[in-house]
Amino acid sequence: MKHLIITPDTIDFQTYMAETEPHAKVLPADTWREELFDLVTNGNQLQGATLPWKKTHDQLRFRGGEVTLWQGINGHGKSQLLGMVCLGFAAQMERVCIASFEMTPRATLYRMMKQAAQNGNPPTSFIDQYLEWLTGKLWIYNQLGQAMPEMLAAVIRYCADKLKIQHVVIDSLMRVVAGEDNYNAQKDFVGRLCSLARDHNIHIHLVHHVRKLEDEKKMPGKFDSKGSGAITDQVDQVLTVWRNKEKQKTIEQFTFDKKLLTPEIENKPDAILACDKNRHGDWEGRIGLWYHEASLQYTSDNQRKTIDLLSLR
Image 1: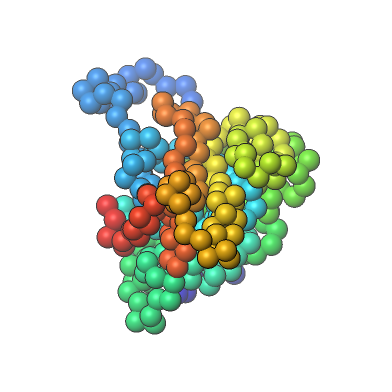
Image 2: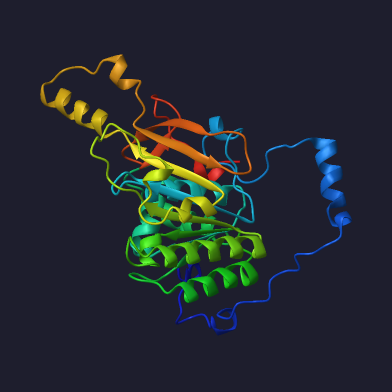
């Protein structure tokens, strides 16, 4: 597993600590000649990596040069869902680095292994297959606790330059910028991420928390993000992960009372992935997902058929 791990002890990030000169911004119009030909010939087609669920492919994509904010109430499964998304990116041969400052690499990889195995108790024989499949596709930045913005920027530059990584996951903003009311630091850090994404043509996924609403039945939106409004203003996409806690409570009560669930309850999504901002796409809306508890996967419908993420294309 050592080849999957990136740490300050094993990599000299000093070369990548200093800000590099920005790319030239003033260019002649014919610089975009080929892109205009492609646009006229093929139309404004959706491009970029897809999510694991086919029903989302015409709605959401993840391209280089952009930043997506993944937000949600604490305990609603945003990091877990994003782990499944990263396996989907890897299946598309898109290289990923996960920088989780809240979970150990072992815990991150184990949770994703359950999703990859479609099994809550994967056999030991699956471990080698799983890690071999991840080779050249997934890296982990190993640091827990608070992270320095300068070091994280260096890690991103290193990943883009040396490892040719296309997706960097930062989990979470609060571990890089301390204090919900530190608005200027939040604005500066997210602005830096947007610049790094553009300059290195990578997609950065930033995990963030939202305020817990008084009404648990109400789904939060982009205006419910903790901290500065400049966070959602600067990113390209805002996605909210929301678990239907009310449905979960109802199921628990029905189980306790030994009552059969009604189709009305069953058909309600276990979770919703909402897009509240999509700067480079026309679609904004909500996608229903159903949770397969054993594998920790989110599925497309109430049949809860798991996805073979290792064979996904």
